[in-house]
Amino acid sequence: MARILIAGCGYIGKALGVSLLADGVPFVGLTRSEEGAEMLRQQGWEAFAADIGDPLTCQRLAQCLPDLEAIIHCAASGKGGTEADYARVYRDGCQNLLTAFPRARLFFTSSTSVYPQIDGSLITEASEAEPKRGNGQILRAAENLVIGGGGTVLRLGGIYGPGRSVLLRNFLEGKSTIDTREQPPATPDGRWINQIHQADVVGAARFLMSQTKERIAGQWFNLTDSRPLTQREVYSHFAEKFSRPLPPSAVPDETRKRGWSHKRVSNAKLRGIGWEPRYPDYFTAMANDAELVPSILAQLS
Image (tube, rainbow, N blue to C red):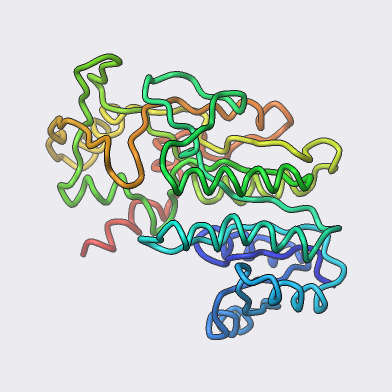
């Protein structure tokens, strides 16, 4: 019987499933569409199509999967998702999974965007996490449901990896700027960037699922590279590697939909219980992940 349910088989969920499949760990993938589920079945997965935002659907799913040990909620609301989309996938999805599978441990992939700080400060799990915008507030509501149900929350930085790197792609397309804020706290080197490699999200999820419930239940963990970088550091590295000019400085748009932040998110708590990232920073990933840079260049050709 399947022990793990992957709710959402996108960039993270699919990579997690590939990892579990390679190790012979029984699991089930959950997608929104039957077409998506069938594609996974053709790759050797056990998969179902279900809407976690619908409580009755989750109850029916629970009848098919009575012996689950763990659920990882890594579903996404989709690009341009409204607050209603966020609420349905994240808040309602978490509540429905908790209700339908009361004996399974729930792991929820949230975001470091719940930290609203713009002062460049070092952020730990004890730092204020009171987002100002609606989507962030919905994520916090979902987190609180998970924590209250004895689950575990992973607060992810910006995800990158093969086929995905917003920073590198924007730089190569000439869209990047260094967010230079003159008023206190000033940002002469641009804002701090907090990222996490796809492989390290998968590794951290599997590490946490291997821990006893008593050790991690009801806790938050920041999941980021070990070394935050400033925009200037990143773009200077890109400029040298690709023989391109450094992006211009620009006043940041602090009213943009996803908000604007300037903070250094620490992963020390997760590392303190034994996890270590494969790629401690973005530059290490560029040098050692053979697919990262070529996959982004291929998107531009």
